Length: 322
Ligand code: ADE
Ligand code: ZN
Image (tube, rainbow, N blue to C red; front, side, top):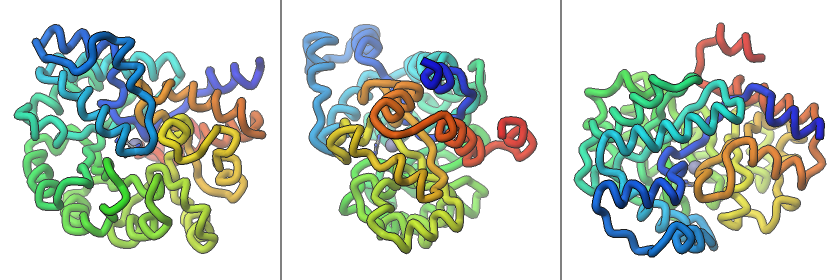
């Protein structure tokens, strides 16, 4: 219908996509074969059957296992090129891609292999693509600092840093020093907060880490004072509807709070998070939300506008999209 055509065709930015989460089961098997890596699953179907998650951690365990097939610069290039082609087909005009270097350096894959493969695919893409390096919050801050040090020779290949992995028990303030160093280096700052963690984590991401966007942030609604602040500051939330259902943040899409967040005046965007694991790329996220919730063409245009407004792109280019 007309709404679906609008959602499909409208130019949009994607601001919350983990490149390792775009690794499709077919590519996992192809890379395992190419690299002689032994997988714990007998077939693509058996692997896909394992994608039944009960919470964030149950997903992360499988997601890190899937990434173990990535060994060469070409592997990282192929994974990234496949995502960029899908994003382009969804009329994504600009994307800001998370990558998790520690997932790979901990296995002995050099930092330069990871970033060069991902970055080269971005250079060859039919849309603009920037990189945001994420620190794994289940590891120590010292490990994050070592990763930031390791990244410095490649400082021109990424625009910012983020914070992801297991949220509860690893509050933003654990990473105060590494974010301060990143800020002093002129890097843009984002963090996952309020996905499974409480509103207090969103507050400390803002106050301690000084982030410029909140990834997820859906639990902000539990604190009216926080919502008022996020609206006043027009702090963008990078919401990922299918992710939130697959990881049981909400039971069903009809219970998702996306419409309520928008109605409160929050700067909401729609994103795919880990599309190979959660059942769809960015347009599938729009479709699923608009099918289940009372959202119309005005909301669609608002969400697309928000995505460019919240993007780390130069003001001139931003205006052209708004
Ligand atoms: N890493 C990949 N996807 C993630 C998510 N949704 N939350 C936290 N860390 C992640
Ligand atoms: Zn995420």
